[in-house]
Length: 357
Image (cartoon, rainbow, N blue to C red; front, side, top):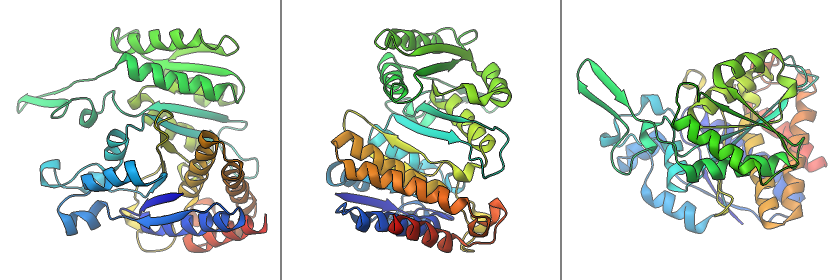
């Protein structure tokens, strides 16, 4: 099984190295047969090839690899698209049609948090919505008719809404059988209205699942007030992007949040940390690699479930447990969590815990 790795920008190379040490430990311990191939992306690719993400890299990921581990990107610092500054994350999501961005958020009783008892998953549609770089066949969905007017177009389709809702219900059946759809259909009558219509249409296929819907601004308040009552949250791209960061921070830190982008029909999957590239601490070996480590664990578990390979699921679970075991010891935490452990040392601690079983 082949895994493509792309360290990308900022702290990406550091957290990638720590993550691969952990995955290699699982690879050896569970005899997974994984091999790894690194590709250039971000500023490294821009300098060498004139573009942050080459189309041939996407082609190879689509046809030659079983999974992708993507580091952090400094997209805001890229040049314009016409000068090679392609959004690497969006490139994978659109290029590989990775429509399901799965973002868990759970509290750990041994770590400080603002949301005791939280254990939810936000299922984010990742290929359309308010994002102008992915809602047109050609060009982008933003325009300026004059220097004083800026317009943006939103795209919501029945096909994309149906498939993300279906994946949310499938996952809910493995959890507490509760799904809430987030929308603003009182204002976006057609776009959010269509998404909500699709949600309730899919719900008919899963009569065992308890369903509800909430307006996005109200849900943001409810998430702070009583996060423990929610299990599976499904919504469109823009809302989920914001709410998942809120949920992760409430659960303890954005640096503790794993994430995958997947397509259940094609079997393609990409592990990606939820947070950004943190260029202010680049090269200092003080970043927290937990998010990418947990994302890689999710990738292994997802591949195992999709392909019916138990040892991949066991490896994913083992990595997640090892992360918790290490975080449970205050002396082994990174600086952002009140400790003094460096990025590479944290990776070694988790790898050792995986190897120890």
